Length: 294
Image 1 (spheres, rainbow, N blue to C red):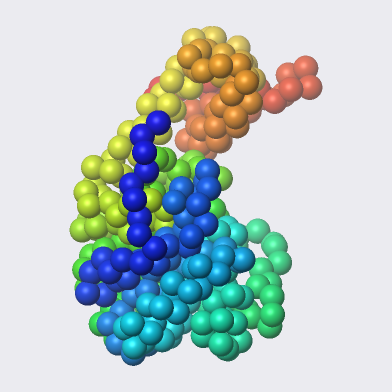
Image 2: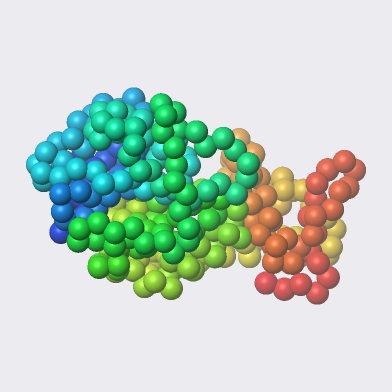
């Protein structure tokens, strides 16, 4: 496995962007959650807040604010996952020292409790909404797929794109809905970003080729799954039966995880009207729609 890039706890990435590492490394967070302080004035925007219970992050954030003689104007959250929202109460308690701090995110598309705790609440973002601070304008871009509320943020002055978990600095992303996720990748490309600031991993200096690789990788796997279904001449298959055709190189103990991935691809193929879901002998199965091609 390739070693991850070294990411310092604090790094100025441009005249408008400072990255503060969440200091919460793990299998899914890589070196930790990247949070970003954006702007150039005495009040700046913080993108994401890391997790709760990581005092080293709070120390880093306070250190940056002191060194640059600035404060937090407001907080924007890319999506609901805990490694992005969990640190909000700590930031409000130990950094902004205010329960009135404006915290914005896109609303969930399912009915869930989005209470932050400690009297804090979200202000909900609209797609295309622009957040302004001294030296910087951030345009919210709805990019669902990783989660149903995921947004990216375009820094208009630099054509830099904060991609949250939609595009990572290293490795590929997990997602809830592949159909939406693929549309979001293509949507980011339409902005022709000059650089990508991901929520995990190193800065992406060549966004176009990096995102094109993401799209190509998913398309190749989708093609393999679809061809496995077509090879059965409309005989329906379970996700696990597809795994045994497509993932012959992986050990059996990984088949269950592979089946979850296959089901996400199948969900997209259903939305693309290339396969259909059928129930056979009490099991969910999939088969090719007659005449469909990929």
